[in-house]
Length: 185
Image (cartoon, rainbow, N blue to C red):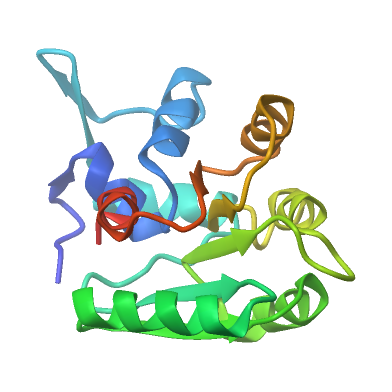
């Protein structure tokens, strides 16, 4: 367990808060998150102050030894089974749940509390873009990492997804090695 007086690097802060590293730098650049030390341009944060900051953002810190939680949202059962198996093969300490549409995923968010959502865009009922918007507009969920996957969308849609808070976009079939690099657990 980390000491409250221990200095943390931005990557560790991102992991503790279950957000992307780019989100941490956004908070830094917007002067919301202030470094306790800057050594040669590198930011360092005291854990105690990160806990206070997380409370102001309504973010529950993930303990270092807690499992990451991944919610796969895709209407293709064979594809979700493939993704789940690939993730479990590569990560020993991760909880994975699956929803086959955005409506079911919306209901699952508060009980499962995923750290990452792997989200298909083209789905019945609530589509992926709408679901991403809902996550990022909810102050209790907006820290959740959203990684989008789809069979082929245009550049305008990719830009919209990134603007709505998606961390990354992957074409289907997804390259598992690239996904693992993005997840970086």
